[in-house]
Length: 305
Image (tube, rainbow, N blue to C red; front, side, top):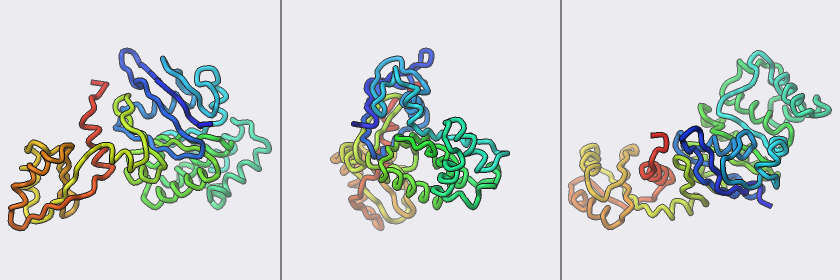
């Protein structure tokens, strides 16, 4: 049984269609990255799938429960971590977790709280006020609260925004540990390195699902060609290439210039004059997920305009 199997989900707010016939399948124990620009419908889609919003059309199942008729059951077995820290800052870590345990009617509460503190490495800080925690420790508290009731599905909405690289890595190590134990994870993110740590990714742009598959599948199917330029006066080269037919993207990376196009022959033709420049080298490069992300964004129309 798939953990998530939804089809044709539609959600409108007034005359705006925020989620436009979105379909998604997530296997049990899988980590799926949910990518897309701000305002693309990621958060709304997640809220539809965890029972916080009701779809205007479409349907499906989450953890075997029907989206329309079993929303309360879905809520009981899902852990949802929002973008914002939403705990009581004047309570300690332990007191916040005890409050969550009361909400879920977990018994004995003390055992659940202690076990969760231990599992997430929070025991030594149990008496620290939540408001005094750094971003990384707040994130860990939020994750602890999400998994304390032992959900089968974890929905994470940009969980590492504003967190330092070390805390992000530790967070992802924890996510993979949980998934290895059978937990299914759907995580929205803007970080390409995080997307690459997922088993599969799904890309949504302004309400419409654009691509899904492994990172390798999505990069390959995008059909982009990338070249890397090295040499002097690359700023001047970048300005010239930006106005050249066949060039879709020009981006500086340190002392190099990455040039991307969807038509390989047209891109080769655009680069020919620069191959002849003294001190400039043009080499075939590897298309990155970020290149694909930018291409998808530039080719999509903002549904809020």
